[in-house]
Amino acid sequence: MGGWDLHTHSDLSDGLTTIEQNVAEALAVGLEGLGVTDHDTTAPFDRALAAADGTGLEIICGTEFSAELRGASVHVLGYWINPTDVPLQDELDRLRNERERRAEEIVRRFNDDCDIPITMERVRELAGESPIARPHIARAVVETGAAADVTEVFDTWLADDGPAYVPKYAVDPVTAVGLLTGAGGVVVVAHPGLYGSRTGDALDDEVIEAMAAAGMAGIEADHPEHTDEHRARFRALADALGLVVTAGSDYHGGARDRTLGEVTTSRAAVDALRERQRSTRRD
Image (cartoon, rainbow, N blue to C red):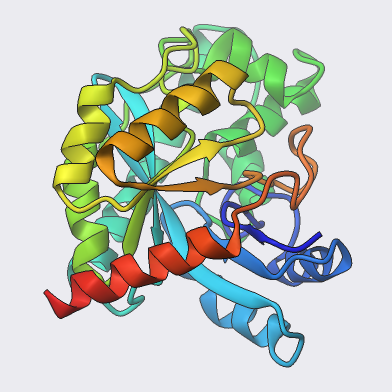
C-alpha cells in the first residue's frame, strides 16, 4: 500500500483500539507512516514510538486540537509538536477539564430532557484512561437500548444543536494555529467539509484563509466522509493558498465505518509538511 495515514485515534481519546494495535494494523496494511492524533492530548507519543521502534514505520506524533467557531467544532491537526510546550499543555489541560464538566451537563440533559437513564459513572468506565468525549456518552446511550448505534445517538441527540448538545469552552481556529505552531508543530485543518455536523456545512474559505495567514500549512482534503465536490474544492483552495493537501482515515478502531489506511498522504506531501516545519522554526 505505502503512504502515510495522518489522522488516527486510539483509546487514549475516543477510539476503541490501543496505540499498539494501531501500529500493528498500520504495519499489516503496509503503511510507510502513521499520524498519531488523539484529541487534545500528547499521551500516546511515547507508546507509539516504542511500538514502532525497529519496524521501519514512521510515527508522526500530533494531536487533533478542538477549536470552535460560531458554536460548531473546527478540528485542527498539529504534527511534530513539542509535548513539553507549556502554553500548549496548559490549553490542553483546560480542554480536558472542560470535557468533564460538559459531560456531566450532557448526562443531565439525557436524564432530565430526553428521559434516557445514563450515568456519569458508566461514562467514566467507558472512557477509561482517555479524556471523556461525546462518543463515550453515546456508547452509554446505546447500552440503554435507546439507539441502535453511536451514529444514531449523534444524529438524534448529540450533534451540534441537538437536544443533548452542550456548548464547550474552546479557542477559535486562528488561536489554535498559533498554539500549535508555537509548540513547534506544523498545522493542517482536519476534514473542513464536516464543519457543522447537523447542517452538513463546509468551513468557509475565509476561515481557512485566516488560518493560513496565521501559519497553517495544509488542508486535509481527502477524508472518507468528504464528497468528490469537497475534495475538489479544498484541493483548489490549497493550490490557491500554497497549502499542502493531506489525507487521513480518521480511524477510530471500529467506532465508524472506516479502516486504517483507507486514504493516505503521499511521501511528497509529508516531505512538504516537514519542510514547512523547518522553515517555520528557522523564522
